[in-house]
Length: 174
Image 1: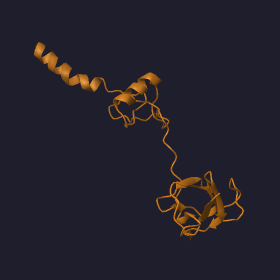
Image 2: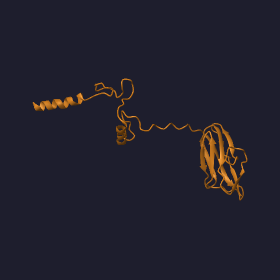
Image 3: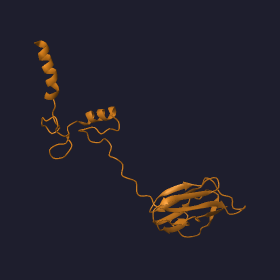
Image 4: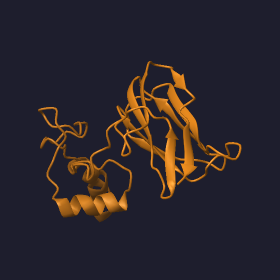
């Protein structure tokens, strides 16, 4: 008789403890409340402990600890590139110079061993290209007015897909 009671208890136990998130008692109840919102109720410490035990997994009844980052802006297809070079001695490129981009996009690039730099995937719009002039050097070209520290640079308006590969900077020593 005891064996029969134990067997009945073991079979009935899983059915008796099924409780839905919305307070109902149906085994098939959804994990969503009656109003369509996720069930809530765990405190911050409990949610943090569950998130630590289950990294990268959405934990029921817990708000996300860190909101997801916003999507990146769509990349454009424009490009601005050029060279920073010594305007004497056969125009050798100057490595390690910083070129800045501002306007609709803000970025910076460092010239390679040949003095080249490039800004790619630019959206259509207004762009200003400036050189950070190092001590002991003077910028000879361009002499175009631009909102740069030294007042000279390139003011460019790109359409989608435009490329401007001639934003060169000619430098001489003082």
